Amino acid sequence: MENEGIKTVETSEGQNVTTYIDGYCERNNQPDFLAEPLNFVTNIFFIIGAILAFRFLQKNKQLILKNWDIIILTTILALIGFGSGAFHSIPNKTTLLMDVIPIGIFMHLYIVVFFKRVVGFNLVLSLIVLAAFVGLGIFFQNTFSPDTLNGTIMYVPAYATLILMVLILCFIKRSPLYLHLIYTAVIWTFSLAFRTMDMDICSHTSHIGTHFLWHTLNAIVLYRLIILLIKDNFIEIKKG
Image (spheres, rainbow, N blue to C red):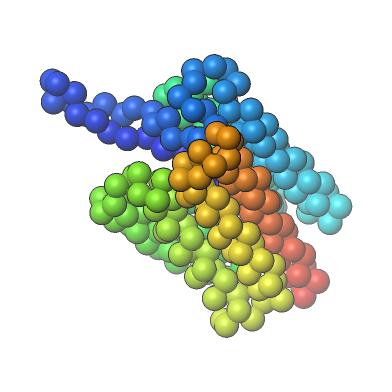
């Protein structure tokens, strides 16, 4: 899951100004349109993931209005690819918003949908889980520098939530999809590692870095999260 870096700096007038951090090895402080070719191109995997998810919905006869939440999540997956691609080609405040807004919406909506659909919570309980997630995110934002672990520290709440989801499927729901979610969590663990090490090993990778692997694996993770919802829905239909 992706949320690009920004930082707040103090101006001489004492005002806080949100500015872009050039925190990607591949860009190498270059202003060129395609200074990050791999970081740009690998966003295509988000779009491919959305297309495959729509096809999976259609194949299982679930591309219906009743599954509007899954359809929205799949649409947002494609928007993540477009937004991140814009940001990594023309990094500025506008494209930064194009990048962070879709992924923020995806994370928050997915938590509600997962706990309502898969876990079986009602809407109120699902929103309480979402509120806890938001609260944990605020705590991390106020406790740690956004540059910690090259910005990966801010994904700890999302990672903790994913682990919680795994535990619920394994030991409470005893869902047959628990292995699907475990594999997804393992993939995201590697994805987070690649995001973290991007700048640290930059000089050893001819200024290519590993952020493009973060994109690639993230696309797989988000695709698998959507497929989990579709498969769970299919299981419920067969039970009915």
